[in-house]
Length: 278
Image: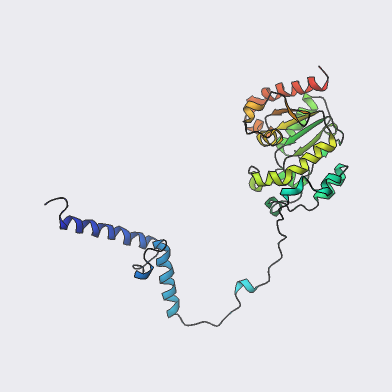
């Protein structure tokens, strides 16, 4: 028998039809779709729709009940995107203190992070600090307490400040790129960073520090406007609007990779030398 004989072709068609019917059964479809629906959409979906509509047409009509859509739902405050002109906002430009800036932020709903946060985590420390630490975003502990770096990573940062640098936490200022916790501590997304960045910019403008320590990838890349990995940025001085910036590894990274603490200590020693004018 030749390979392309009518008998072989018939077997191929029969096998293909068999596989197709099996796939329909796995999708819960008990028959072939109607001929007029062929060629318009997914086969499994079509079959489910047809069979359900046929079944519903044979059922007795029950007493009508109010649709779920008509039940009153609690109002959800809208997310208002204001990132486009926020840098030029006269109200933001008029802010003169960190307290006024916090009041200007208000119950911020400028990005989707507002929907899952407990509270805004603005920042804490000396409003005239020479040294500012900028992190990525609040975590669970920070979201609950309303203060940046208070969880395990925050405890490590406190040790760096108090034991390594011989400073008090209240002598420095600590903030994050975004002020609300991302769900499940995921990375902040570009639109969320864009929505919150004007507030970080204003914080730094009001504090006027001599040095910024950028903790981790997102802080360094946001401040420096580059996409270079933190592994290449750390340990090298950069500049942000005339302020010296030392990128270093995030404390949360050090909790997972304690052997790299020596790298952060090298960066912190460079910061100390700069603060002491050496």
